[in-house]
Length: 288
Image (cartoon, rainbow, N blue to C red):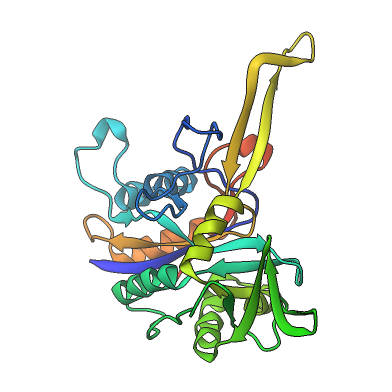
């Protein structure tokens, strides 16, 4: 079985939901049960890729993704997709506009995926000593400022942290940037804005830094809000970066054919998740 890393970069707010919620948010995003980490289910990603695949008379889409529902028992698809887990969460920053934030636990799980895919190898993920500091991948960083005579202060949402440059993180981010972004300008922006915070701080941001939108439905003839048609919907903010695995079992298509098909599909942005008619879920997908 061949394994590849797959990155997803959200260009607009991304709602991959789980249906009706039981809390204050009527339509929450999908999350892992144990870690509360936002995800895009693998089935969602596979459906998007399959719907965008075009055959050239060689049935390559069927060989890569499997037969249509009526003939699903004939054979399995050659491409299998894990859930995409959040790797970098964009959060408001007092300096630099916003930061791409992650945590040591998230990086440790990402390192395990890299070993499975035999790519982007890096050593022990950097550790954050306490919840008052954050690690930065650039020196100087776009996120730092001077507050009350103290240098290298980073303010994320309502949190004030002390930034510390980490050379190991810089090396990792340099490798990541060229695999996530095709544009060199965005690669530089990414390097200047990566921030690693304590796991507890990241858990706080997972609850407070997602996007909550009030949605309504109108009465067609009256142009007023329909009774009971107000709901709150959660989304990952634009610039969120997720990562997952694509596994290839060479059933009807070999690994090179699968990668060629996925690469061809991913040449243009794809719509992932719900609310496509209001511009949600426009994403770049990059296969390493």
